[in-house]
Image (cartoon, rainbow, N blue to C red; front, side, top):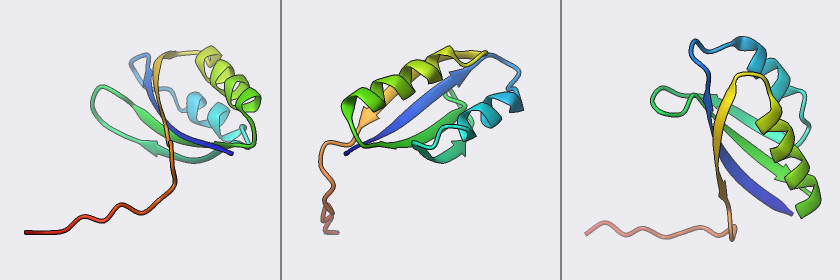
Length: 84
């Protein structure tokens, strides 16, 4: 299983049709609207590398998506942070 966060930069002004298209992908489990360089963060969970690549290709083809940055989650484990 592959899980990744994808940061998406959209053409200004932001178009709600982008959200509707992204919602149609069953592999996209969460969508967050953000402010700053990136307009959206989506969480993708796919069962195979091939499926993941297909979803990423489709995201890059969505009208008004300028660019993406993919952060693949390497290992699902809880990191312990201790305060000093």
